[in-house]
Every structure is written in C-alpha cells, then in structure tokens.
Length: 277
Image 1 (tube, rainbow, N blue to C red):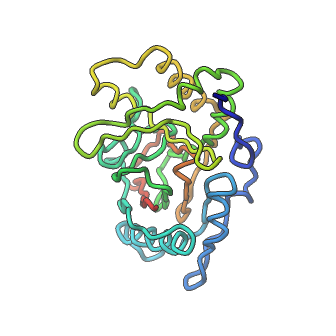
Image 2 (spheres, helix red, strand yellow):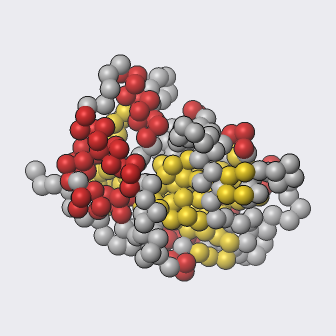
C-alpha cells in the first residue's frame, strides 16, 4: 500500500507564508448581504479560517452577542454550508475556559488552566462539527490570543521528518468513551483526495484510558510528535482578536487554541461560540 502523500497549498501554510488578505474580511454593515461565498472560499479553498472584522455589537449585552454570532453564522453558512442543525450557542467566560466534557474542547495542560493547546472541537454529535465560530465580545485584559495551526502543515512536516509516526496517525483512535461519547476515527485521513485532520490529545488519552491499557509505544510517540509540532511557533499562528472579530475555522482542516490570559475586575474575557455543519 502506498504511504501518505504531501498535502498541498494553500492549506499547508505557516505563519511566515500567510498574508492577511487571505483570511481577513470587513464585517458587512447591518442589512447588507453577508460575504458567504468569500468566507466559504477561505474555509475550503484557502487557509481554512476567516476573520470578519468589525461586527457591530453596540448596545448588546453579552447574551445578545451570542445571538448575533448565531445569526451571522447562519447567514454565512446558509447558502453554502447548510443549516445550523447542530450548534452549541454559548458564552465562553473565564469560568468555562477549561475543558467542559459536553463541548469537546481540549483539556488545558497542567500548570496553566487558562491555556488551550491547538485542537479540534469534538462536538456533541456522532461526527465533529465542520465549522467553529468564535465571536470576540470582549478580549481579556492581558493575553488570550487565538492559536491556529494548519493540519496539512503538521502532516507534511511529519511526512518529511517522521513518516512512521504519520502512518500511525492514519490509524483509528478513540476520542473519549462512555454513553454518547464513543467516537473512533483517525487523526489524518483522505476524503476524496482532500486531507482531513481531527486531533484532540485530551480526548484521545481519555479514550485510551477507558480501555485500561496505555497507548502502544509507537502510538504514544506519534501523538507526542504531533504535540511538539503544535508547540512550534513556526507552525502555529498567534492571532489576537479584537472586540467584534468573528473567527470562523474549518474544523476538518485547522486546529485552534488559546494562549493564557488574565482578567481584571472590570475587564472580563467573553467569547460567543457557535458550531455549524
């Protein structure tokens, strides 16, 4: 059987090769058509993420901003991406920053509960959501930048530096366990020639723990190699979001995370999150 082949541009980007015009769009004024086609092209033919800058949140309280986020995602995804038939519409606060099992978010590493390493959202359905949307309602007083990493870039670096590890990642992994949480899928696979990635180390480890046996050495090495690349500044884009920035991420192609952050008594970090198929 042939081994994995390289994934190609533009999905195999690095922070050094990306240009802002490839992912940044101005938010449309109220009542204007949403740039659905442009966003869809960025998500599926471009780098795998897009930012709409300048969503009008004036006069809205935090909960109303969640509704604004859901409405925008429905407009952006409706003509080209289907209905919001599975979504998690919620407000992310400092209290919910660490992993919440029902959300499928990554578990923060030991030592800093407000850090999230790059990962894919697992979601609540039988398959992961295809698009994640995060609306910055209010940035943190300090830190809290978004982290983005292209699955294709990690794939290609593994292919060049550690092909045995990459072959392991084409095998099936358990993403959690228990009623409603049993999901088995590879980290990397091809779908009609397109590379699809799904990675969430916390849930993979949790699923393996449920079997009562540790990861085989080759698999643990492959996962550790993945994590090392996802900690490399040459792989991961650091993107501070402003109030009114709407980040949309192709959850089949790009991993997202967050740097640690600090809030103050008057400035509390708030994000709205919506999942879309």
